[in-house]
Length: 67
Image (cartoon, rainbow, N blue to C red; front, side, top):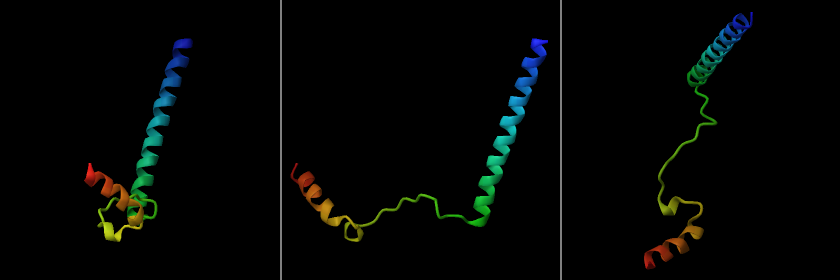
C-alpha cells in the first residue's frame, strides 16, 4: 500500500512540475507577443559626455591614469 502511495505522489509531482513549466513558457511567449518591454533590462555603452555621473567618474578616471 505504501508503495502505491509513493508512486501516486511521484506521479502527482511530475504532473505538477510539467504543468508549471508549460504555464511559465506560455506566459513568457505571451509577454513576447505583446511587446511588454517595460521591465526588460538593457545594456548600452555610452560616452563619458553622455553620462549622468560624469562629475563623479572623472576623479576616479584621473586616479587610474596616474597609476
